[in-house]
Image (tube, rainbow, N blue to C red; front, side, top):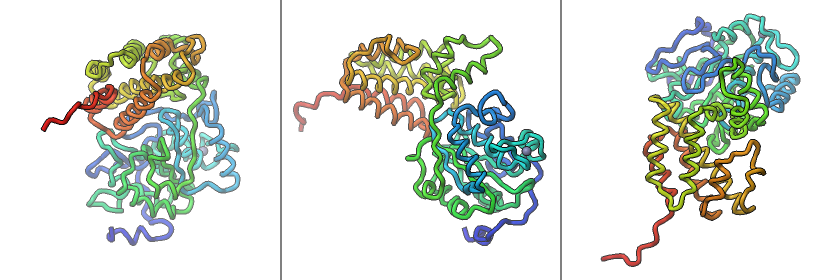
Length: 417
Ligand SMILES: [Zn+2]
């Protein structure tokens, strides 16, 4: 630590020249670089196109989140953009795309009113080319359960001569600002967070650090207390439908009815809606609901089938995790609906959420459990979902989840001695 305390404690910035565009920090990790292409995550799944100049939808091509946009527009107008933000909201609702659009606007040399990037200045051109030296985006690598320390302060050989905490001290190459984005903030380990604290407390003038996570409870208290917290809501079903419809515009994609159904079950998440459009999912989902409702419940069979459909999603871990997330999300829907049923009586399929989710309604009506069982099942399923995010071994996770859904065995009559 002491080796870089000097740089650390300095007010202002180190005076090193900016890197040539796209210089890769090879180090032992080799998966992030300065001026990385802002349209793509360098690690992790869910690569998404930079929203850029898609003018047909909301602010800079971002549909939804108008309240957050208004907040930033007002803050910028008053010269009150904070040094550290913590963006919180469910997965797949466009927080990453929003953050990238915001970063582009914040470094634009001639932003238009409403915090809209001009699209023509040197900064916008670099941002569009994916090589902006003042926009620094890091995330958790797929094969790690946390964001490695090196990402923030460089590897052992380059402590505080590489890494996000060091790069943010450099003078902006193009304009007056540097923006650092830490995606996957849920996976910030204590060690990494500790290295960030000083930066968060005293960000260099004009630097903006944005952490992006899913739930406030998953953020370390030290990070929470140093950040301005911005909450993102799930998207309206109609927005999800519109985004999916725009993607399917070439006519070869899913039907409008399938899109509407997926949007209705998406919980406001575009990622989830996209996965639900997979034609296989409909069958797998219906089968899962049937098994969840079945009495006697067969945990072993459930585990076997869930694992088979996870494996069918492909060889790589990200699609497998995505598939399991959808299946467990279905179980969450099931247990939630079962809790409601217990409170309100059987649901009339015609009164089910639009569009009607016949398979879900059928399963819930057939289920013999109590509200308490449903709460229990919900809790266990949410735990399992959490395990996916923590990179748990999937077969073990599925086994444990399905076993825990089994009704408890009766207590032994006597303890043999
Ligand atoms: Zn510009």
